[in-house]
Amino acid sequence: MRVLLFTGKGGVGKTSVAAATALASAEAGRRTLIISTDPAHSLADSFGVDLGSSPTRIAKRLRGQQLDAQARMEESWDEIQRWLVDVFNWAGVDAIEAEELAVVPGLDEVFALGDIKTYAESGDWDTLVVDCAPTAETIRLLSLPDILSWYMERVFPAGRRVNRLLGPVLSRMTDLPVASDEVFGATRRFYDRLDGVKEVLSDRSRTSVRLVVNPERMVIAEARRTYTYLSLFGYRVDAVVANRLLPDEVTDPWFDQWRAAQAKHMKVIDEAFSPLPILKARLADDEIVGIERLRRFAGEVYRDVDPLAVLHEHDPMEIVANGDARVLVLELPFADRDDVEVGRRGDELLVTVGPYRRAIVLPDSLRHRDVTGAKLRKGRLRITFGARNGREQR
Image (cartoon, rainbow, N blue to C red; front, side, top):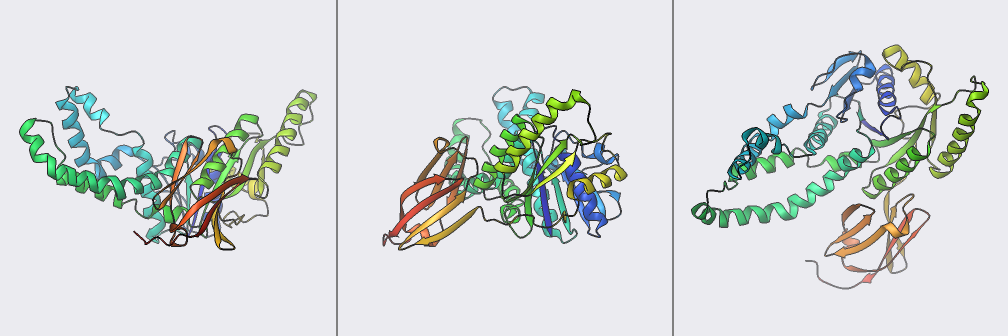
């Protein structure tokens, strides 16, 4: 199965590129599903059809879905929400406000991850295309598997044990609603729906992220940061789509300054994202809406390129030998040395880039070695681990 995720700054044409790619996949004979994790939900507008919260027919071999967070919450969050409402009511919050507060921000992204995993493992589809939210939300979406895994492995078991010990005491001292085993069980089942999603999304043989950009300074800057953060969390970007380029047919002098600016920015894109392939699409002369228009747009974007191929192969993380030492190499394109911090906590390596932190569980080959140095050069963070220190495995 092929999984393709499209992201980019809001307004760059990300949804159109994703929709065109899904259509090309279906017309190549592959059972294709395209889903939207963008709360704006412009996917239905792109195809010119109504889409529901379950796969809806768009064309032959093509289905689409726009996530309904409310419906997913009722399916998976009901017991947890009832407990949170009781807590907020106990605190004096109005009933309606309590219901609103019980919907934790970011739940729609968690539900989207669950859908991606379910569809990827169902065997019902050959291609899954994900029209992601704008870049900041996409980074949060794709960092969730690491964060939730860390919480469920470390905090959740301890919290459950403390609740069993202190719950009876608290119930005698106060009428504060205490989380029951049913609430903890619901939390466990909620997480189990997501367990394994990171393996799906970081599987370099089937999953790729594609960045959609316009030749504009702020758009390029955001795309570069996104590329860095995706690499930090182990996701492979296999192409950049440069959209809305001024066509050569436009010769009016009024556009000369615009054309010169685009040429300058395209040079930056070509140089900055090398060796990633840069797919190019001209500024359309009409709205890209409907099957026929999306078909033509897919031809414009991909030309002689197979839309479903892995367009660039690289490993965001690898371990190489250096004599008795071992070097963990992380691809962090565009990262600035001043924004990168490296730390060690037990069997985890903590790598921070700007506002994002990833806890990397060290493999056995590195677990019993001490970090002896770290160097960032040309977008590659090299963390050196010395000779084995002989400590027993914990």
